[in-house]
Length: 381
Image (cartoon, rainbow, N blue to C red; front, top):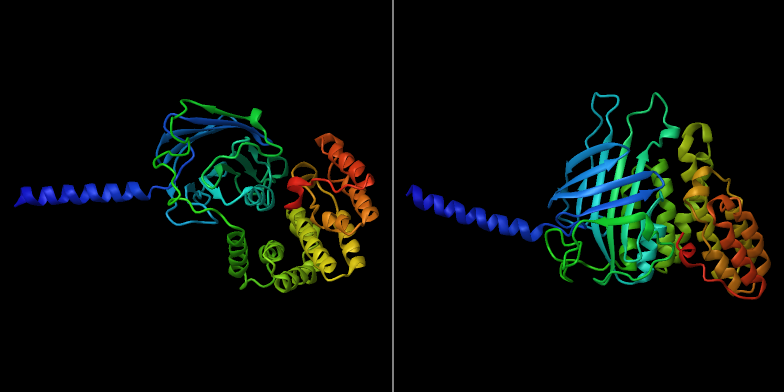
């Protein structure tokens, strides 16, 4: 009887293991692989230890972490993650947050929107074939005060796909800042445990981003006057506009604008003020585009210039790009002069020090020649 029980237990264990194997999500790293990347916050290395374990190296530190399997999609991805525990009693403890996942998009536009529009904090480095790395330190060392809690370091490692295939080119890619170390498997390098198939990865559609934005907004409804809810109003407004829900976009953007005076207080919000200015950029862009659609050309002009007059800060000069969506819409109506004025206002965001002023110069020449520039990723902010 005991032998029969042992056999049954072994069979059940095997079935469980097979079931668990089936549900292990797609990872980016394969066995014996490492990714080394140079970011604006330093050089890092992420190394495969086991299907769910990774070694992280940064600034002379090394940490091995067992990641959690994300069985259900979260913001369009499954993959592996470590949300990090709460701060302990050690005042010098560094929390480590990790996210490793594959995104499969429906088209290039959706990929661009993920990369350039849906990251509230920037600092990605990425290759032409869609390998993306981001490393962040919160709070940044230069802004940390003695009364602040210990720092958090965050590692994001993504493989972006378009309908199951790697992209071949990506604007502003940094291929020289990322190195793949270790063997290159014959199968796709993101297979880690299971190989990617169409049944395992659902392309991210435009409507999915809308659903995610609205869900994020709804979760904040109980905190009617919170800073977090106020910032998410802009994201929800932009996605509503993209999906053609103009009335909803207008209501969300107008609410964000109406509540803005209560958040524009540098002494109260400190470094978060940077993101408050970004929200001002959001509602002015949305309301300007809606005004133009309704035939109110003067309001659209004024909104564009309001975006350009947003106060500048260090974050905007190093990682942020102003939207050119309303500028493009106005150029399509022949409004060259106001767009050229907007370009000049944007120079404070794009300084020569970060080599982006030349982009404005190129666009300026094209507009003066009667052309509409290819604004590329700047249409997605």
